[in-house]
Length: 395
Image: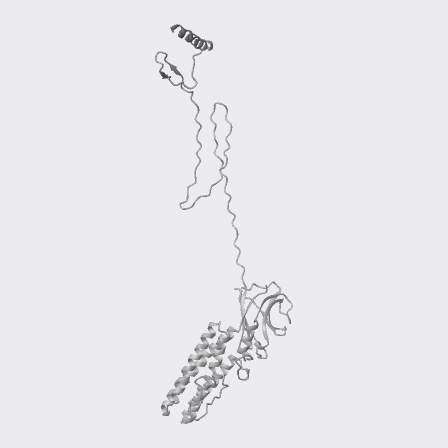
């Protein structure tokens, strides 16, 4: 047994001694060497072999942008660093990236806003009904050198009538009033308007470029002429009287009969006073109104008016321009004031004492004068404003 063990171990011992001596250097393990104690067969850990020191690369620190609370920053693209090749045995040096210069923002000069031309044209009274043309514009630029603006009323047949040349204010405003030389009702002939560029001094007829234009559309023109020219539609008025003209005429007749009642009372003529008071009530009411009747008791419901009534004309104006609050409000004011006048007239009709009648007639006359000065005139003017049209640049 001992002989066979010796035979096995001897070649192994020879291999170990020959490998170590041939190189002439001590044996070193690459990582670690485990020595086997043959006597105990227990493995023991050999001392670790120190590794040669290696250079530690320098860390590159980049500054992170400061985050704004509540705002998520967008990911930014990093600029690659230019790292030069270092010689053997030297640590590489890192040059920080050169900052990209920020471009100065270029200031964009602010341009003044382009003025927007706008305006309105309409008609008023000078010596007769709608014999005046009115124009108001804003935002109008000055005309080119050597030229001027000239306005033209456009008739139904296409002919043009000059309303003159006009200047532009420093603020771009234009205010023009032109009166018909023969006091004609302009609304009865003209439905449009335009402004042209003409040579300085103006032209006898339009020759230049059309700059501004405006006019009535079909229904607006019809309604405007029913107010101030002639009513040729339902409901029919006596002699086709236009609504605004009938309103003013019947109001004047009613006021005249208030004055007639005052004059009759001044001479003690009570029956005549009562007759004129009946006239006042019926003129204001119209023949189809609930208050129309025989109020003086003579058996006849007399009416020196046209039978349509102040209330009737005011109501038709409000119906035609029910989208115009000013017209509707003024028409309501007329109806309210008319009712107050009628109440006072009916009250005086029941009195027998001439002194009391005279005192009450003074109050009635004050109410009648207020009707003409305030709601009736206000309604008439609101009707003229409603019967106007816009003037805009030619597209």
